Amino acid sequence: YYHNLICCGMFFLFYVIVVDNETTAYHNVTLNCFYTSSAKHLSWYKQVPGEPPQIISSFYKSLADSNIFHKQFKDSKRLSVSTGDGLYNLKISNVQSSDSALYYCSFTLITVTEFAKGTFLLLKSKTIKLTLEPTYSVSVQQGGSVTLNCSMLTGSINGEHSVYWFRKTSRGSHLGTLYTTSSGGKCVRSPESSSLMHSCVYSLPKRNVSVSDAGTYHCAVASCGQILFGEGTRLNVEVLHVFKYYFLILFLPFCLIFFEGSHQQPEHVVDTQVSL
Image (cartoon, rainbow, N blue to C red):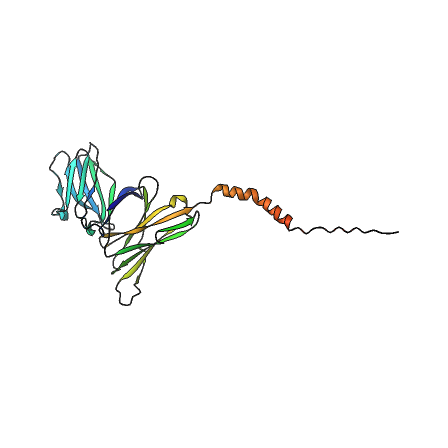
């Protein structure tokens, strides 16, 4: 299966597709590219985080059969394109771990080239696991702090890791936010003495949490040409409503008066009669 969400990182808006190869051995994905009628030339690109973009294919709108695949994509049997009125779609058949990357299309208007919304294609790995702590969900009061930890169990710690955090909100559509962090994780050998595996932990600290921070957070790690996608943790933000503050402010003085009155020592009046 796969699901979509829209993410915004820096000023770049793109979709995310997550493919679970653990439950589906064979999966096809179609990436959509829509362009205006004034476009003359179109191209598809693939970019693995940390590497330069690679051109996959190009197409002249005025020539129906002009699409060509470039370089290492030229002989691929798993890639195909479909063209039509205002669309130039890329289909990836039998999705593999090497397909994990950011895909985006461009269209040229005479001398200006524009880029459409990209698509982040992520695959869940069968051999390398990403786990998120706290597991499942965590609740934090508004204004509080929380740290989400993403753990990766891997057999190698060589090379740089790029870490991405996705937040999926509960408001209607799949609108979300992308956070990026440097590799800065801590990798240690697994406790078992005979194990060659290493556990790498990446953290996303959240300070002064507000209601806008609520949502389901996922982590993704890009390493060695692969992008690994982790399970999600739900962050709930608890709000102390304003009327509760008003209640305390209005009734606290009365409570104090009552408290003081109930603990006040009674006065003892002694009548003294003086006989002359």
